[in-house]
Every structure is written in structure tokens, then in C-alpha cells.
Image (tube, rainbow, N blue to C red; front, side):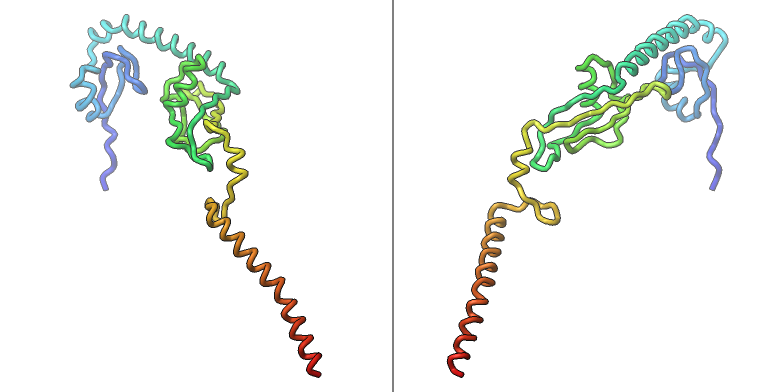
Length: 211
């Protein structure tokens, strides 16, 4: 099996590209990425001294904007420490949601609380599908992260309904008809057990009389 190619080419960025660089940066990329995406769309070009110099002002402006965004994110991360947000959702009697809580839902909840957090900064491995309390990581950059708590509550009280419900050994809900039948069968068994000693006593008395 041939070894993967490590060949790269150098391009000059005409605009900011996330996880790659800002306008005016000279970066190395895979040939296919440059040929199929960056160059055809005008996002990058072959670097020349003239073009690098021409983009210096735009690069300085982009760098200043990134610093401003980073400062804002630092403030947000500081404000998120120990934060708890509550989301109310519809669910069944066992707390399973009709739908799920996603990164976008958490982002919207935080924005409503005054914290501008994009859904991409919400690190949620899987959507939340049950009521409960969940720790969630908010991370903008490697050194800008915080843990918050998301509480998902039911849109109605489940306590009284849960007390009235019964479940079998496998966790399945026991229907009212099955419960009534079970109680009736148990009652019949107890009655039968209560009658047995009396029948035994009657047989003993008969044998005694015959003697």
C-alpha cells in the first residue's frame, strides 16, 4: 500500500478561513484543497510580493477584529462559570422527550440569557432525549472553555402520575386491566389456600367417626 502523499503547495489567503488563517496569510495546503476549493472560488491565490504587500492593511484589520472577538469570548466564558439553564420540554410518563435537545436549542437558551454562544461552541456528544440535569461544555478555543449545567424539565408534573403507575420487573408499564386481573388471580389463590385446611379437617372427622 503506497504511503499517503505529504506534498503541499503555498497559497495567499484573500479572506479569513476558519482553522486555516486570515486574509493576507501565506499558508500551505493540500493541492486538491487548493485546486478544487480555494483557488476556483477566489479565496486564495498564488502568493507574490506585490499581492502580499497589498493585503497587509486588510490583514491588520482582520487581526484586530479577531482580537476583539477573542476578548468578547473571554468575557462570555467568565460569565458562564457555574451557570445553569433550564429548558422545558414535552415528554412521556417515563421522562423520554418527544424530540430532543440539540446544540442549537442550548445556544438559543444561552442567547436568551444574554450570552452570545454559537451552536458550534456547544460541545454536545449526543442530543439530550430525557429529562434530567446534564453538564455541557462550551468551548470557543482550546483555552476558552467552561462547563455549564442544562436542566431539562417536563412541561407537566410527573410525580402524581408516577405514583399511580406500576411497572413490571422488566420496567414495562402494567396496564390497569392487567393489574386488576393480577389482583383477582392473587385473591382466588388466597381463597383456595384458605379453604384447603377446612377440607382436611372434614376428612379427618369422617375417618374418626368410622372408627
